[in-house]
Length: 85
Image (cartoon, rainbow, N blue to C red; front, side, top):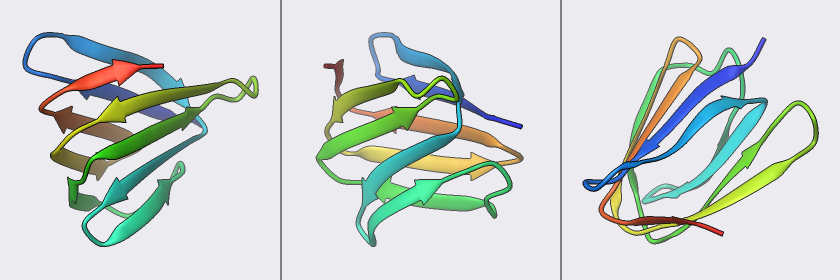
């Protein structure tokens, strides 16, 4: 079982794919999402989103302010700006 992840900025879809875990920094602190996570809605703060795949790969994405929503193993991230590093 995996998470479906989509990170969107006003200009483009920055990242889309499946992941075993997504780590994001919110106004409540850093939080990790894994399959089966309870529904969540939070405010992103400037920092790094880390996406970990089942193959062991890690993708880092620098973001500014935005939102994260988790529901039914889907993680939707919306950010003012986002750059994959």
